[in-house]
Length: 325
Ligand code: AMP
Image 1: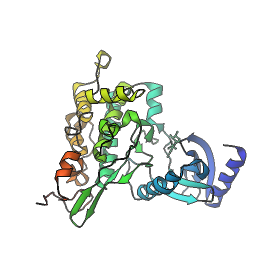
Image 2: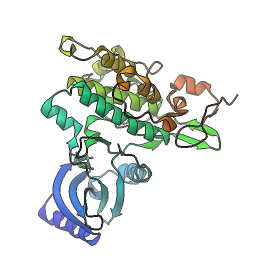
Image 3: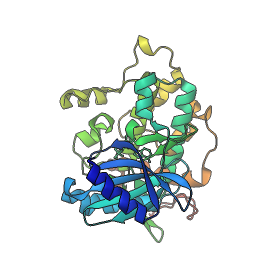
């Protein structure tokens, strides 16, 4: 960022009680800085979006949704949203700082993780995603670049730019909204998204979690996204474990295969918490959050057959699951 721009950013931040710190990185629309928030005596991350660089749809649809939903989410495995400030030319988003950087960079620098570390990180990803899904929210852009690390190497899910509330509950009637829009990165989306058919976004997030786990333990993405036709073929066939992967346990491989499978046989998030590989790393089964959540993971063919079902899930709502009929 040019010096004059840094000056503008610094003076706006000063006015709101922040001291501009070091540059952290650059995204599609934003530059991210570290800043010191004097009131809390703590360092935070500040995303600075230059409005003129962003597309109208991003500014009018995705950004307001991101801010509204992110604000409402509070969990130890999610980057916390603190505040947003809008000026004529920019939007400033104050976030919890993740001093450990991106998991992707860690894998690029150090190669695949041993299963103990992958197990710890994957369990934390599952805890965060169970919480998000239990609120009826889908992330739709899960990837290693969006998993950040705190000072103790704990996972913090970030970037809610494509998030959406996809399950709503009115009284005791819940409806799940299928998505039709393509969201996310090719390497992380499931085949049903590439095929352009209406898809269950809860199951699509689960697929992305499988791509993340595969990449953590092998150091490579499971599918080659340089050619879309080949990518789809590879996805439908499923990931391949070669001789190079012989050190990975059969339990871990089995879990990956269960996640990266056809939409009708794919694991749900509650299933992940019961899998024997996960059980060896599990710190806590979030029973209340998981209760009744299975209904979020029905494939589109089954959801279409159902009249809006009377179900409740997680977060202290009425527990249990009943059929509408
Ligand atoms: P993004 O705009 O989310 O793609 O982020 C741009 C860069 O800033 C990436 O290198 C991120 O790792 C970094 N970054 C984003 N959010 C944070 C945060 N909360 N803490 C530390 N670094 C961050």
